[in-house]
Image (cartoon, helix red, strand yellow):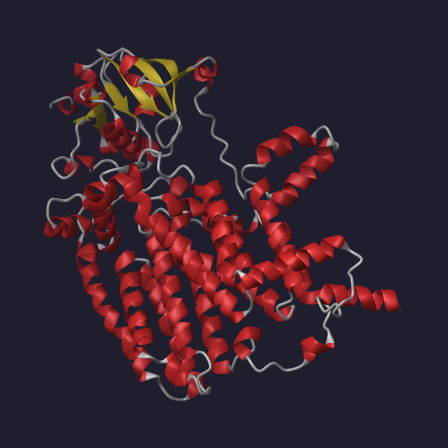
Length: 593
């Protein structure tokens, strides 16, 4: 009985002073926990630097992709008035992110890392805010659990993109912190300190930031209004000072009016459309890389032993997670609404026939990291040993699913049978809900693809022939990064009927409107006049790209297509084809220039 009681005491972290633990691992973990609690921000910086290096180390060097180039070009508009005009005619987002990129480019020069810097800093700042909040509510150990949950999800790639999603996450996190500080402990003596004018001003400023960062920020802002309505109902009276701080920024919605008036009928390919499977896949991505840590959190929350000290009431309700209903239920409402935003966005986009990408649900990071960390911290009564167990599991999951996965696959066969190895891999990362099954090329080109060489320099490949991009993605990227000799012979072909019939996607069929708006050097031509004028040319792209139709049409029209090699310096790996058009399949009146 004494041994059992001693073991429970060790797990609860309440070893008597002077009593030596028989387990050196337990002693080591407890010392690490003490260091983390003593130097919380040192632990945060070290953890964030390591995770950022794993996930974002390439952000200063990668070429700007298609969407980032929209941000890059709009931020360089000759005047602020022109910038604001482009945000509601070319790229439909509120202006804040473009203004921040404009400032970054002015300070650090027109480089890709300067273009991405505001997004990266906003993401790091968001993780710092969430870490601070969990540290205040429980302990720094559980704050590390929250940020490690974030870094374990591959969607953190959006932190290194020059798009407004990191800014939206930062603004939502900042609003959450100051909103909570304004409502916490409303009956305590520190109420006046909680309601200092600068806290109210911070609520207003962060609300402006949220509403001016992205159109979807309006849904996130609505979640805060819903939480405040719940608090109003529980209190029986309204907090007008906080309501004014939240409602004044709604004037930002005036910036959305031009976006709503800009109407364009765009057809999106079936693969990218919002469907129940695609929306379920979004939530699954947050779970499938951390099944073991999440299972550990659940089990520890259920079965963690209680000591007598744990059962005694504490004087600081904020540190134990025990808060009044007027704080708990609004906070729960807020986190629940934030968790449902991707579902709401997906449902609306499905109704409208629009595309859905995982970055649209970036605010889901907030409930995803806070709920498990706070649940375990509350149930385990801030026990450092319980927190350290989960921290180590999350670190192991992050390492194995990033830099360690290749090594693990290579070495595992030498130690365990294949069936056990496969089970271990599924424990570290559960499979996708659906796996694309389309081959890279049709069967008659399979042999050429397997023998294709890597192409590093497009200038050296048939320099006298035009180069046709299969999609607007490749066209815009090659137009930006290509040499003058390459872009002089670079083309994007357009045929709306073919785009609808083959790809069921017309996203790139209005790119001629970018001429004169962006500094494009390539050319945009109708398909039939170009193929009549240039019966032999190069084409670059992925044959089965969901938004591409040019290569498929050429193949259907029995043009001679020969794979010269594979080019990897665009967002998606592309093959370079030599194409010879053997006969025209265009209607006579469609060949006219």
